[in-house]
Image (cartoon, rainbow, N blue to C red; front, top):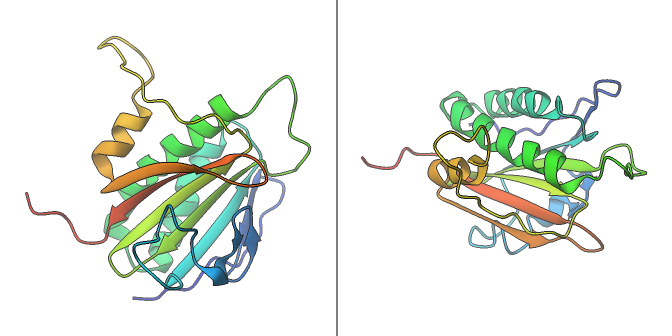
Length: 182
């Protein structure tokens, strides 16, 4: 299994990628993931990829393409459908609920997507500038939205969130590399 990180940077499309060792809002990839998400794995992840997102609604589709390309590079194509859906929900939540359209963020990429490859799972983490916690909703059967965190919960082996100093939060989900027994 190859564990190379993304090294290309695409600017004008609202998506920026960072390679191995690059700094993103949670620090250097060489330090490994912070304790709340990935602490049980120990050590530096076998693979890391991150991309900055500009806070537009199109970011969900850009994030899905980034996930597919990263998992293809890591030779994990079977994980793409679940990981793409999880990341799409995480990014959509960040764009819709964590960014204030009245007060645009002064940075080019207010939302960051990070992917960490561990021996037993892949952790997908989305960092945004809001410190408000994610709140699962009880969506009615006719509701058009409100099921994102329920989908994340159903598809991942675990998910949670943590505050990200100096501001904001990171919401993460871990997806197992091996399919759970049914």
